Length: 310
Image (cartoon, rainbow, N blue to C red):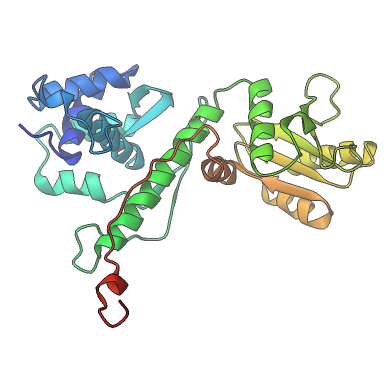
């Protein structure tokens, strides 16, 4: 049988997670959902057209993405899924099989909810993005659907990047930040970007030499934080820059900045702030820790068929 669409994975996936209150490995959930849907071993060997992933695992992953957006499940750590208290209540109030309308609501009703990476010990923050066109709407052209799909894939990659960054060590996070800045064109070579973080770093985690003689430098602070960075942290960074007689500094965090911190950065010169969302976006653009696959979209070359031009 063909592998069902991802919406068909939502109910068996959530019901299985409801039996695993402490959470379970994602790969175990993939298998349980596939077995519940009656997929054979041959069915489970089907690959995406790109050949990069098994179809049933891909669709189980998108089903879980929808459950996370609906607030019914979570990813407390990479490759590990856990039902939320809201998900437990949802299952209790929906003991009967999901109706087609309910399944469609879970599959399509929360696409506009953007997830902020869940970090252990903190609640998952969700915030709404501008409304998107409904995929099945007759006004949505194939190009529109492609654009929506690409944006959704990008948002999913951003969320996963932030989850990964939240779990690396502070030292390795500083290295990632310097790798990213080098990919962005800072420093003639990677050797021009040095990590100096540690005790007694004075609020400086990295130094970038913009010229070979090191006459012009940019100082970097990298914070792998769960909570937002406040004004005191930026003031301390600004003081560390003054101690180095530096004119340029970049403050990068996996979280965000408070309103007071943003106001302070605007009141001084030479400090650039990069929050978690922008950090993930830059990593995607620079393909740092990210690979991009080429999708060939056929488009007719009208000029070729213009006999007068030919």
